[in-house]
Image (cartoon, rainbow over all chains, first blue to last red; front, top):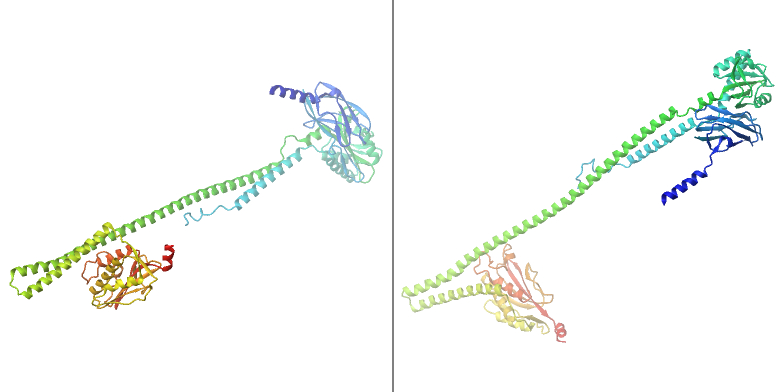
Amino acid sequence: MRRLILATVLLLVVGGCSVETAAGAHYVLRESAVDGPNRLSASGEETFSVENTGEYSHTLVITDDTGQVIAATGLVESGEQTSLRVDLEPGKYVFSCRIVSQDGEGNLIDHFELGMHRTVSVGS
Amino acid sequence: MHLLPPVLNRRPSSWWLVLAGVCAALTAASAIAAIVVQRQSTTPIGEGQVFVADAATAAGMIAESPDPDIAVRKARNALEIEAVSLLDDQGVVVASTSGPLVGEPAHDQLIAAAASDHRFVAVASSVGQDLLLDGVVQWPAGSVLYQVVSPLDDGEGSVMLHYDVSRLLSRRAQPGVIESDAIQLLGLAALFGVFAAVIFVGHARAARRYREVAQESKFLRSHSQELETANKSLDQARHQAEEALALAEEKIRIRSEFVLMINHELRTPLTSVVTGAELLKSTELSGPERVLVLDAMVADGARLQEIIDQILAVARIENRGLAYDLTEVSFDELSAAMASAHRAGVSVLPGESLPEVFVRTDVGAVGLVVASLVDNALTHGADSVAVECSTRSQIEPQLEVGERPEEAVFITVTDDGPGIDDEFLPRVFEKFEKSSFSSGTGLGLYMARMIIEALDGSLSVQTSPTGSVFQIALPAVSVRQREVVAT
């Protein structure tokens, strides 16, 4: 009986975790975050959408855990949406915006350090 | 009692524990610092500071060199990056380490806007067209570049840097590398940890040893007390044995003296009797002489009978005890009874008349004791003896046997004899005890003591070289007590 309950709970937990394929993934860029799924299922070369809902221009750069760039968008202006075609092997990746600028007082505005990065696990 | 050596007799100082705690705290602090350093080194960070520094270096070289082409090459070689270019106010490349870029506008919109607005900006993105470096297609369209533009100090143009994004980020990520600072901090943590462990373990062992030694000390102390108690018991037993031995020796001495006394006291009158009888038998004596011999024989026989009676009386008392029929007699009746002791050399002093005072005693037995005390005084050299009854004690006793009643009537027998030796005084009421120069059985005062004790009274003595006083204390019954008893 206890095993049955445990199995049911596990099924519910696993079923509750959303795992999207890259084709269906949608990532949103804004000033302090990259929003989107944390887990993706690898299914070969896929395309997912990237939308900039922030006030300024952003990019989305995908790097693996060694820092190698896997893919990147061009500059995505505020309010625009683009698509990115990727072929992700199983592993961990960092989805980030790699824009650095200075304000009028010379202070660095590093989008990555402001929180525009997300670690995404790609399963097999 | 200190049974421990001085070093073990002290509890280990708590300051060692404090020191161990400080070392443990330093261990924890060092470990935390190492973790923080390592996390900081491995956490991906933005590249803004690198870009600003590199752009400043390149701008400085460009400013110092009159030839922009040479300046950008020196900057690229110094920075070891893919390309360094010089842009004009419109964002057009005027000098570059990549010749094909010269005359081209900045490809990235944001870069171009920043160059025209004299702002700093760094953008990593995919390029929209092939990018030639030194005449070779280094980055085809769709490749990802990091392009940085930073305005020059003179406000005329900007410096533009090209980075290979993967190369840059890979160099900065350094996954799995443990920083040397973290290693040093970990070593420091280990060192403090060892110190803390050594101090703590040492203190714990010292404390445990102290506890063990303290327990041993307690054990030894308890056994020492037991030994002390046993020694005391042994001393008591030895003392009792010595007393018993002394008592046995005393009994032996008394018995020997008794034998001597019997030998002397019995043999002397017996010899006199036998000699007298032989004299009467073997010689021709005149009538008066015969009478003298016969008188002497009678006196010696009487002496023999008296001695034997005393010995038998003591033996009978010791075997059966004394049982008197006590009756209440008045003080005046007792005084009158004492008058019977009057004889040559003995005066009975008239006491005060106290008809309300009664004595619960056996008058006959008391009379015998008084007579014995009188005889004892006359035997030991007294010329006169006085007997007196009183309700007050007449002496400060040097020796008293029996228990003096709370309310008593006293009978004193005072003589003018030579007194009692100090050495003999403590034994004056003991059986077979007699002074060295006296004759007798040594039973008279002993019997007097036994009789008085049987009458619930006491017998005491005070002596000096000018005489002795023996005092009998008998329990008195007042009129009031008699009335209470009567009702």
